[in-house]
Length: 551
Image (cartoon, rainbow, N blue to C red):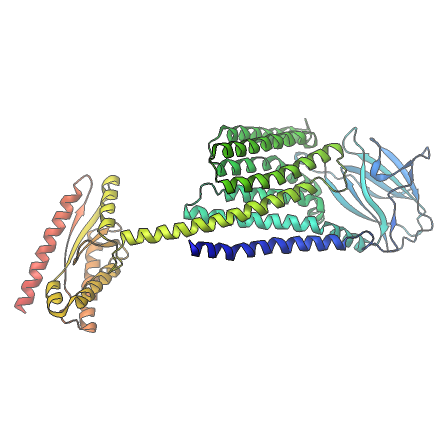
């Protein structure tokens, strides 16, 4: 127990340090993003003072629904070596300089991706001497407003640098979630191999962390810029949102020992139906994925309710460890609050400058932190228990002197052979003259005789069978990987190794190993094969003694 506590105490500071360093990095990035820190004096913001044909003024971040044609004078602005930089969200638009079209964005994309392209960055070169800009905007979806954000005339490199500085905190959190998810998947694989901890569903937690990270990184614009295919990023973002709902419920069901709950099956049906209908309706053009998004959000709400229900039920029925229950309650509370806040913000204002996942990232990060720490500690504890159990099992089934499997292990093997009707060869061995060695030269020399015989038998039959020590000087080998020919070849190898031992080690009494073998072929009796092998071994023993006395 002391070793276990010591090991856990060594692990916890490392994990905490990782999160603290990451949070400090995020905090530093936020401090560096103070207003005006990265803006040059040459930056000219063009978010406001756009006017239509009736001279009505508009701000681009608060446009009315429908198509608009807006103009903005830029006389006196030195636009040389600078560009018109902006972000667009699901908006087709055209930019004209003094009445001449210089840029148009209305991408064509495969129908299965839907009409929406999501969000994208634009850096548009302006002709020298431009006096007036004209924007013709067309929102992709009816009854919605065009979305153009952070419009300015400035150096393109500075614009990109400022963008990445602002996105650094969100990107850092997303990267941390992705790395944490990969770590959880790795731990899940090793835990499965160890066959420990049924309540430690690392796979669900790891996949959830990765999907949330991929979903929220969409708002950093990094993937859009890297791939130059914003519609695909948007589509994958929606797909992540469809499947995210299942994972926290699956994790909670495992953690609360309710893996077979009907709630999981209901949720599986809902998610499958949503996925299939989304693909079919979107690809056929009947209903765009944009309008199907509320279905995914509703399923997420259902999943949240299921998660809370499973957790409260487990706590009331005491089917979950108290510490784990408190950990889950705190972590899920933070995640649920974050998700709910972002859902409300999205419904109220889809163009929120903070994006649609700011609070979700914070909530999920807290959830991963507290639950991840607990799972790592629990896995370490279970691993120690598993290792201790393996040692105990090895002690129970191993012979202390020779390190071969013992009589108990052979009895288990006999049961396995009978139950599974395994055809095999049974070989009985006995060390000749061991009593003389013990009586004349002492038990230490007798043990040396036994150990030498054991190692020879183990090595000569290693490729075809398993050797057991079933008595003081008695051994049995069960051969499953070969028949009579392989058995006789191994026996010949054994005899050669015995001769080499006697020649090189010079034991006071030469080592002799008598043997006898018989085949077991189901449904014949295993006991009969063992009896026949034993008879043949004693016949071999008698012949060896006769040959020794003759010589």
